[in-house]
Image (cartoon, rainbow, N blue to C red; front, side, top):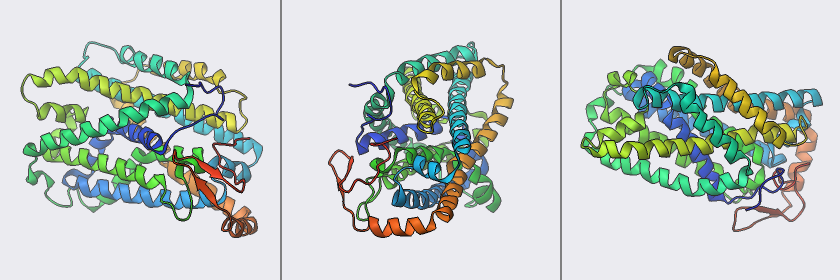
Length: 400
């Protein structure tokens, strides 16, 4: 397998790309987000989760339609929308967002493991394994992550649905009542902050038309990603709210871990614990490595740095420094709330604002481009790559 010394040799199939985003959302499922949804919505958690899925789907359907109609690549949209200094600032902000993202993921799994299993270990002792894994995995670039994700994501989906089937005898219909749970505000307004679980969809914009196989007659991979991620989230929420009364959820941490123990009251629960910890940790290894490479890719493509390899080690050092800072669990929850706001701003608001500015600045050119694009033919290969017979840019295959 060829290593990526730059970002021009990235290759993946549709299945592999969907797999990496299932893994990223799975990292969210392992974190505190499902617990926050349940806390906000109580017995109406299924309704609240459905609202999140629908809102995020329509937002990204709009974003992708606009971006891939014009340039096939959000990076190109940024270049044509903002000045050079602003491009550099945006690249740095997205990079720092990726670092923040990794920090939150590592802290989440570390705090949860400490409170459930490794009570005598420090947060940094648990986190160091994820830091070392991120450094080793990122050295092989995107290709190796995509290959591994293709195998791991399918196994995790099977595990979730098997767990759901085993939990059916423990589901209590009374836990889903009253229908509106904590009321209209909690279900439909306060719960919107949990859109952050779908923030990884932002990263699909950076890979260009090759990801989505965009033609007017083809359905986009975004639909598949949203379908799988939404099903996973809904199934997990149904397990939680059905198997546990909402008043008990405030004392729980790794909810998937709890559900696994609930469905096996025998000594099997002790034997399965190391397997689950390994599985969750491996998902985190892949998730944080992918996000780190995303941050480096943006820096390189927006000309802040010449080679991404020069910032991987410094990024690892920065993350390590953040994890060394003493932090109580209460303070971490406050930081996590700020992280959710950042996810919504960068993952949802920023793309929409950029598209609107771009559309206003290039209104006449876009009309001409759309008319011209209607006459062009895009040939899609079986592996999910796009071959543009009329030399339309496909962000990933041709960078700068």
